[in-house]
Amino acid sequence: MSLNPIIQCSQLMANTSPFKYCGEALDFNIEQGAITVLTGADNMGKNDWMKTLSGIYYPLSGTINFFGSNALQFDSNERGLLRKKLAYVTEELSLMSMLSGIANVMLPAHYHRLADREQIRVKALDLISRLGVKSGLDRLPADMHKDERFLLSIARALMLNPEALFLEKPFAMLDAVSEKQFKQFLLHKAKQDNMSIIVSTQDFDFISQYADRILLITQEKLFSFAGSDDFLNCNNTIVAEFIRKANH
Amino acid sequence: MTNIFRVFSAISGWTGRLVLKPLLYIVDLSVFSLLALRDWKKNNSLFRRESYRNIVSQIIFTGIDALPAITFLALIAGFLFTFRLIALVDSVGGADDLVDILVNVIGLEIGSLIAALILVSRTGSAIVVDIGNMKLHGEIEGLEFLAININDYLITPRLLSCAISQLVLTVYFTSITMLGGILLSSIVLSAGHIQLLTLLLTAVNTDMLAAFIIKNLLFGFIIGAAACYHGLNVAKSPTEVPQQTQQAIVNSLVMIFVLDGLMGIALLT
Image 1 (cartoon, rainbow over the protein chains, first blue to last red):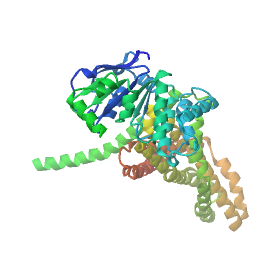
Image 2: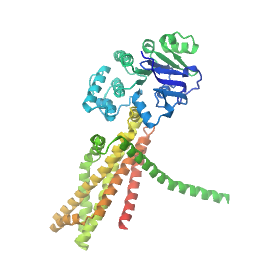
Image 3: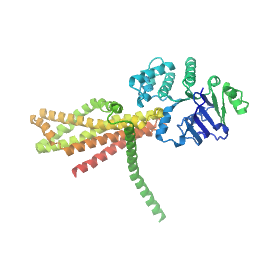
Image 4: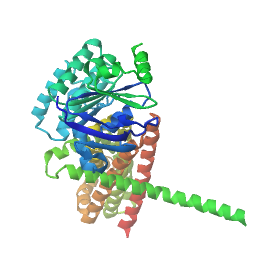
């Protein structure tokens, strides 16, 4: 795994974060090819942190550099380019309701004119099959199951060949088989394609098996761990309490 | 004395707000439309076919799909306006007066207004509901996350397609209304009325034609702009969708009638 940081945070405070925070853990990097997990109890502002880390929100304080450049100094064009490099999939699964499944996946590449229509279609079908969606690509999102919509949202986000993929609660809507297949897909993307994966989840299986870095968001502070062993064996009472509650 | 001052202040404040609100709305709508056009121009070339793909699909929805309703209404309007005007004026005036009235009333006014009414009620409301629901369901946010410019991808195609559709629908509506009414009058009243068709064609001058084109393009543009603007104004609640739809329809109609009145005065002078 490369240790080339694509996102560097210094004294970063997420926008609209619901609690006051001070401490060292706000200084951290997200490396290329690493799987980073943001976890914590509900309503702790995980998605606000995700959106701040992906450059969608401006930080409340501190600095955040994307690919070596300060996000606060980006103009609208640079922010547009950033969105192509940092893919973000929300838990609302916002596929375009008027477009079919395959048209939704092809849309970003088609809009940015990355290739001709046939090449885009081939790439879209390849991504979709790797994600395990087998049929019904000509249906509208309203006629699809939630897991199909979710996987097509991922495929759509990956059409722009991003350097990082941000996922809000990605395992909530998958069955056990699809979940396992999808986790393997994420691992492959991170380790083979060197893509950074940033996930907000409370899934302890994923955290313990796949995470390279864990950020635990609590009301008191934000904890950063370099790997699941550090996290699971942490003696801090807040962390231990969270792990105990989450495991029950 | 203080009370009088308070009353006067309240009245002047109310009047000021009453005057400023529509003016600010027009400024907002103009800036919104110009920004949308600027973003479209930035990402597209006027001479590239792909630039018009979205516009064409919108024209199909806005214009082509509306043709059956427009045809039906135009035939009825042909009877209601053209036939009855011919019957009324024929008994008191000459053919020149009749042609003048038909060109000015049906050609320049009624055709444009009825086409605009159809476009507002059919396409304008659909655009507000469409964009409003997209906003509610996070579809627009999803597009922005993919670096897709909303002004370029969603707004400008709707603005331009409304403008083009309004012009084309008015030409179509006016033609059917005139043709239907004249044919009916030539069958029912006098066979000589069929000559009105050739007289009408020669009566149209370039000033009238320019006014007709500009007016209809502006009508369509206003309908599209108001619909998109109010659609994007939907924030969080589904109850905002009908509220914004109602505002878009009322505001479009007010602006269209005011603009029509202003252009009528300009043409007369």
